[in-house]
Image (cartoon, rainbow, N blue to C red; front, top):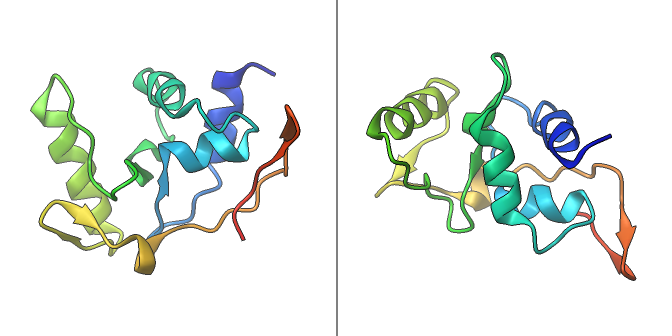
Length: 113
């Protein structure tokens, strides 16, 4: 399975009202330094994928060339009950603690507990 397909599969598991970070997704896939690659994979996300549930490491909505995408993400998160304060999600309140498959690559065990 390609990295992109693995990203999509994991993002589909994030429940409503929860968010994950790009780095968290990368780490759960056994590639802890591939947060940007996760973002690139999500650029061409298929319809129905809850891409809006992925935020940056500070809980913020990452900048995009098109402002409409940022506004769409904020609206979708708020519709799911995820409050943003000063443009950020409280990761303490809304972080998904996905366990995914615990991947081991390069001797690093990855997973969120």
